[in-house]
Each structure stands twice: as structure tokens, then as C-alpha cells.
Amino acid sequence: MTDIIKLTAAETAAKIASGELTAVEVTEAHLARIEAVDEKVHAFLHVDREGALAQARAVDEKRAKGEKLGPLAGVPLALKDIFTTEGIPTTVGSKILEGWIPPYDATLTKRLKAADVVILGKTNMDEFAMGSSTENSAYGPTGNPWDLTKIPGGSGGGSSAALASYQAPLAIGTDTGGSIRQPAAVTGTVGVKPTYGAVSRYGMVAFSSSLDQGGPCARTVLDAALLHEVIAGHDPLDSTSIDAPVPPVVEAARNGSVQGMRVGVVKQFRGEGYQAGVIQRFDESVALLKDLGAEIVELDCPSFDLALSAYYLIAPSECSSNLARFDGLRYGRRTGDDGTHSAEEVTSLTREAGFGPEVKRRIMLGTYALSSGYYDAYYGSAQKVRTLITRDFEKAFEQVDVIVSPTTPTTAFAIGERTDDPMAMYLADLCTIPTNLAGNAAMSLPCGLAPEDNLPVGLQIIAPALKDDRLYKVGAAVEAAFVEKWGHPLLEEAPSL
Image (cartoon, rainbow, N blue to C red; front, side, top):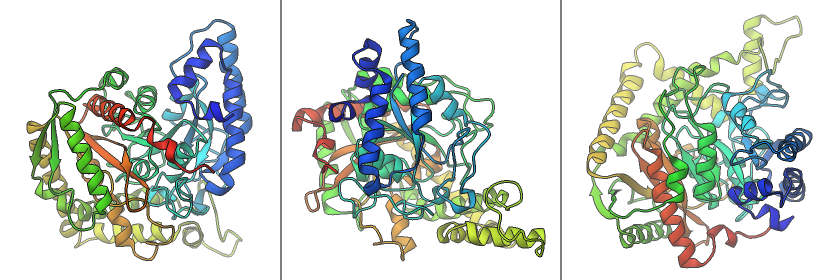
């Protein structure tokens, strides 16, 4: 089992295609790993054992018939519990959808199944993707496999923890303000936020519709690229979906190089609040990029300092609108329906019981920002700042091919450390939020361990919209250089569970 779960997704798929392993063997190994360690980690909210084994058997039958298998056929995956899955629960980490069984698959779910990827189950997350630590889940927090007393990031901490604890070689996350990249950074894994609109949002429970984006999570850059290629592409069911070819991400990951590329370093992405070890590893990464043949260009993007404030007006405003559909009348939880309450009272009681504190906080903030007399002062002003951030990116990408930064200002903090201080929690997304506001593509990959706490540090790479392949080209080059320098993947240093 240990040998199987330590394989990359690409290696696993090759062994299944050659007959060296069966998809059922691979799936059983990961299900056994989940059973052995997830009681400690709590990465999964629902494990679909029977469904996963049925998918695996179907892959083995295809191979036995001589049918061509896709590049990820038979590879297990952990799916963030924000995508609808026909026949198994989708809760979005909330009590308001506890026990809800969707009657349909999200487009992303359909594409995974069509590619014969084996879906092991649904992973834990901050309720409605609102959070940076997975502590806002109604079903309890997830632990970071590097140190179970630390957070695994959020909102997609279940997916990142599943990867770091070898419960799955692939995972899916969503990124509204950094919820793929920040968990990747603090768990020593790879996470990618594709260009906004590149991956369908149909069947993905909405938090902030102009920011939400699904994307791939993995332990290597190539594995992330293979998954990216499976889930991306135009979807007529999603009005925000981009009708454009998927960039050649797999080819870029197989041919990583930064030779002759211009790499930007933004001065706003460092300073007060940044952990010394994070800055040290980032500076080493910049030096490494220079050694690999890149030209380093200093950039000044003054509007980035306003990104956090703008985000925490725009995202709650859209959340206030999107979550209005959870009224207790159509689906999900219903509280107080005993014949003595009106429909309005049932809705109020349902929301009081079903939504957690952070969700209520953001709904109230968003409703206030959208209210008459305050719309222009708050929401309207935030959208103007968003335009300034987009313009700063446009100017920057006239000078450079990609931008690099730390993914997060600090390494993983202790569970419970910031729960009573929302502002301190929000600062975890300081480096990731500008990309969501502009709609660009971005990746986080490991760049070492912080010397003061021996926890992973993430390097963020940002590319222009629809230039996602640049992320993989640069990411693969950096990853290969790190492996050569230390002789093994960084994740091998993670403590065993």
C-alpha cells in the first residue's frame, strides 16, 4: 500500500495503463489509507467507497477490452464538497445543506467521470468557502499533516490535507480569494487557480460569482497540469465560461524552463506582517530563477495595497445575494416547519440554525454594503479599486512574462489562534486576492521549509489571463531545480501519520 500511495498521478496512470497495477488495487490502497489516517486528519466529509470501487472496476474492464484509456484513467481524486455530485451528499461544509443529495453532477464532476478519474469522496472546507483555515466548517476543523495542531489552509483545507497525507494523489479545490493556493502553500503541495472562466462553475455552489474559480490540486506540477486539462474548457451551461482553447498546460509542464523569461517581483508583496522564514525562502527562489536564466524585474503596483479592503466588500456583497436562495423552502435544511410558523419565520429560523458565524458575518456585511445610501460609497468604490488593480496587472505584464511572490505571509498557524480575530484571519490571503480581483491565473508550489518552524512555504506564480501554460512552464522548472538541489520532493519530509 505504501508504495502505491506514494506514486504521482502520472506514475499511477502509467502503471494502470500498462497493467502493472489495476485501478481497483490503487483505489483500495487509498481507501485503506483514508481508513487508517483520516480520523486524525479529517480531510473527508464523505467517502464514497462503493462508488469509487465501481468506477475503478469500470476502468479495469475498459483496459481488458483494449479500449484506450485517458491520461488519468483510474487515478483517485478527492473532490471539494462544493461541487454537486449525483447520488452522494454535497454540504458545502454547512449545516444548511446537511444530508442534501444533489440530483445532478456539476460540469466539473461530469468531466472527471468522463476521464475515468476515480472520485474517492468529498473533502472538508470552510462553510460556503468562507475562510482561510477550514475552521469554519460546520463539521469540525481539518488538521495539517505536517503538524495536526496547525491549520491546513482554507477554504479548501480538506483537499490539501488529503494530498499531504497521501489519501489521494489528486484533488479539486475552488479559489475565491486564495482558497486553492493558500492551502497548497501551508501543506507543501501544488495548487492552481486557472484564469477566471476557464473551468466551468455550473454545479459549483456559489459564494462570490465574479471571483469563484475551480482548479486542480496535486503533489507535482505535472499532475496538476494533467488534471487542469481534464477539467478546463468551455461550457455553454456557464454564462461566465470562456469560449477559448485550453492553453497547452501539459506540454508546458513537461518542458519547464525560465530561460530568457522576464519575472516580476512586486514590492507590495513583502514588508510588515511577513514571517522572516517566508521571505528568506522567497528570496532564495528569486535567486534560483535568476540562476535558471530568468531576468528579474522590480515592479510597483500601488493599488495592490487596497486589494484586501476591496475584496472584503465585493465578496460579501455577492455572497449576500447568492445565499438568499437558501430559504429552507426548496431544498436543504428546514427548521420550524411545525404548522405554527409562517414561511418567513421558517426561513429565518432555518438560516439562524443553518448558517455559521462567519457566513452570517459576511451576509450582514454584504447586505449593508449593497443597501440604499451605501452602495456607491462601499460596493461601488470597491469595484473602482478592482479596476485599478486590473490596470496595475496590465502594466506589469507589459514588462514581465510572470510575477512571483510569497503565496502567504506566514506558514501554517495554530488551530484556534485566529478564530477570534477575523482581520488576522483575512490577512492570510494578502498575496492571493489581487489575482482573483483581476481574473488572472496563478499557482502555488513548495519552495522549502521556514527555518524557524520547519513548515512549508509556498511560491506564488501569476500569469496573465489565458496564459495559464506559463504557470506550468515556470513551476516545472522551479520544481525540478528544487528536487535536484535537495535530492527528493519536499513533501517526503512531511511527518508520517
